[in-house]
Amino acid sequence: MWHKWKEKFMCKFSKYIKYLQGIDRTIPMVNPKPSCRPTISYRPIQPSDLEILEQIHADLFPIRYEAEFFQNVVNGHDIVSWAAVDRSRPNGQSDELIGFVTARIVLAKESEIGDLLSYEPSKSDQTLIYILTLGVVESFRNLGIASALIREVIKYASSIPTCRGIYLHVISYNNAAIHLYKKMSFMCVRRLQGFYLINGQHYDSYLFVYYVNGGRSPCSPLELVTGTLNLMRNGLKSVFARLRKKEDRKVSKWGKCKETHCLISTTQSRRNLTTECTGYECV
Ligand SMILES: CC(C)(COP(=O)(O)OP(=O)(O)OC[C@H]1O[C@@H](n2cnc3c(N)ncnc32)[C@H](O)[C@@H]1OP(=O)(O)O)[C@@H](O)C(=O)NCCC(=O)NCCS
Image (tube, rainbow, N blue to C red):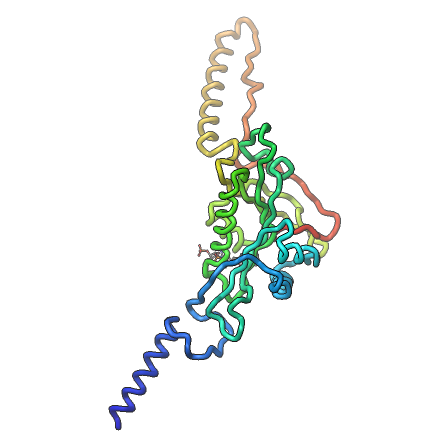
């Protein structure tokens, strides 16, 4: 009798341990939080996601998005999107959005970062992907879901021959997102003063870029170092030349030397918004 009870107990105990390890999902979940190992899969956003998509946007972002935006996302009008769902969720929730990224293809020459591309004016069909919104519901954060969504965007952008990069705006206090973009090797290229106007208060934004298909900045770090060294060398040459020609009282051209482009532009393209932000920018 004791032996049987022990066997039963051990069976239940090992089942529970398996459940905790995420191996056995036959025990019903009482906690709505994700199990330790959710089974995340990624798919395009579809019309049936409309309600939850609107709900999550309202929960996560300080700005309101227009109904037209959501319609465009779910119907794929001018917008590409990926949804993250947890296949291990019970009660018909296994296809419910727990994360998303939405993006739009824009013409490089019409974008605000055209000057940051190794741009060939002859190729006017060059494009960029602009990330509109990205979010993961709170209970599923720090599991790498946003990173995986961004990887989907990178894969997609890289598959378009005309695409030269991905860019986005992020509000300057959003440390989690800033950390994420840096981790994913996005480059912070600009700080835009007062870019967002939220509840009457202005906030700066950072502009991040990820280059694909050789669309790198005209000034790579190596070029920046080489450029600086060349500038110094030319400067010294010119100083010596100036000293040599001093008696002739000729003015050297050194004073007119200009630095070329800079990787991280310090130009602060001011985009003060006068009304509530109704654009689709990431915050
Ligand atoms: C930003 C956001 C999308 C990240 O989603 P996520 O699925 O948790 O992201 P990941 O798990 O892929 O990566 C999160 C990283 O941020 C780090 N992180 C989390 N909170 C952080 C914080 N407050 N400060 C700095 N880093 C933070 C994590 O440690 C992790 O980095 P690691 O892998 O180096 O440890 C999510 O927090 C979110 O939805 N926020 C609200 C909406 C939003 O801000 N969207 C972005 C608009 S541009």
